[in-house]
Image 1 (cartoon, rainbow, N blue to C red):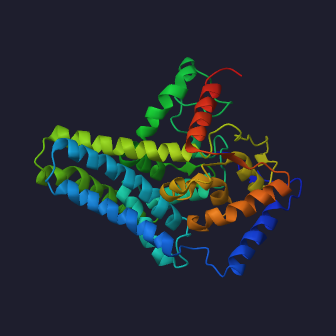
Image 2 (cartoon, rainbow, N blue to C red):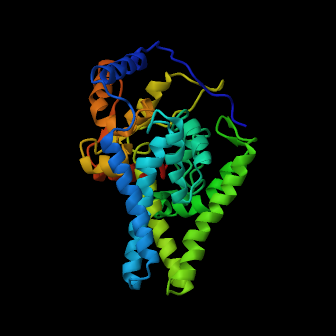
Image 3 (spheres, one colour):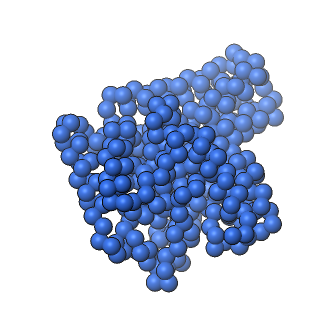
Length: 360
């Protein structure tokens, strides 16, 4: 079990109370709710309807093999976009002020073949609290032993090439989620600081029932209704998840594993000598913050700094509060990390992997 970890605001920084007061003031002055607005509901509807439509087109059996493969790839992309734009906000309680709305929309995570209950623990509770802390934040454990993101981790000869083979591994993320990760995390006794030894009985039922439904709708039903062979179905299913996994993996990693972000080690007493909010600034980076395309498809995850400081604010408002957060960080002499484009963030991630794959 990991030592109990805590943050200590040793310099008595007033950064977070100040930026929180200013963000709250923005919503009050503009008479805005921090939750979803009309544009957010329209975007969520676009991705959900698009997903269902693509699935329906595939099951219509009206297309040839290559067209079906293209539809499967698009379906994988839309699954990732639903995760970014609908499930993520809802599971953070940011989509609506009504818990039942967030609960229903959070269940859209099942469309990815993933479990919202397990995600809430590993992401909301663990990752958002102990961001980039080795041994505590399991989100940076991409492929233990294969990918090295912790300088304290043993360095092996194959790590010298990790900047090349890590990207294909990201593509496997979705398949792992569907067939392995949720089961492993659910039955793991300890996840970071979280005691994971007891779950409500209903969550056992939901885990296995939802997985069975996903396997039926994506493996059994297509085999029954489509005029294809089993190996064609398997190729389509795998390609769909490779696309989905690559999109998911890249977007999440470009926010925390780029040059400039830190991977802090707590001291012997399990203390991080830093305020939690400042820790978030040091371990998180934005990418393509001025790109409307990135904002639309990534669900605000290109502005991870704002998300980590204000996870209960719907991402549709991040462009408006970015200037507040950035100016306040600069006012307090704190880092505000950002890559100006998706491409520059990708290159930065590549260089970090290359650096961590070699001796210091």
